[in-house]
Image 1 (spheres, rainbow, N blue to C red):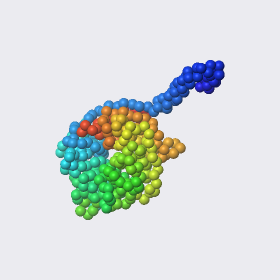
Image 2: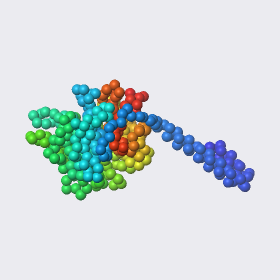
Image 3: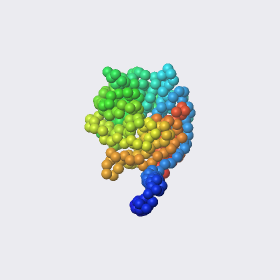
Image 4: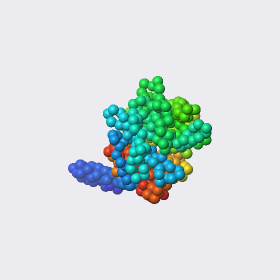
Length: 372
């Protein structure tokens, strides 16, 4: 480029009438040069396309968010739970699928008033020191969260736990369950359709009373919000103690998950490269401290992948390392597990919502073949 510049100056001095031609030549050279740099940077991020092993049976109205219930005694009998937000009446429910995407109608839990997101936790301490597994979903039209005993699919919340009480803006949407490794206490972190710029998320300690009914105690308000769209997707990393949530069109925000921790934001990443909304967040764990964070680029039908452990110089710096194109359409809810479930999903399972009333089941091996 410097050589071109030197000779163009000499050419201008000798041939001033051809000034425009030289400027055009320089502009072309500069454009080629910087375009090649841009392409080189883009080409460093690999993009792969994957196809589902199965597509689930359809729900009745409007799919939104899945959760994976791991059967420790018989992994091949693990279950996929998903929300159907319902029609205009707001009536919806939780649909249950096997690993082939077949709906197990006997386990469906219907009549929930617009369930939005759902998450699962293991070992909630019950009566007599017994432990139960639970799924918890948000119920938007009643401003509650609902607690379901697993695998029985039995509501054990006495009609629901009120959230965002005394707040002007309620309408719960996103939810993630955090289990404290030291105390085994389980907390529900809940987001809403709208909220303040500070303290957008509420955190509740889940407790089982003498009657066996689960209640929630508010223990924390935290989390920044841009005010631009909404916050729906939340994911918790129990082992590392972090919570992530999508501030749609802005990025992914990262905080400590423990209620007694600092309310300081640890990171805001995934700020560029998204077509519009940042949505579903899933965490794939390859070891105790390493793995990947997948974030839905909703309108582009793809997922951006970041390192769970961050970068070597900064564990809270998460840079894009891969883009995965799926066959889902506008996916805003997803879940992933690294457990071996069966021969087809021996490296784990990724489940993502598609807006045609289905969920897509992917083999994780196709996502991270080189890394596994």
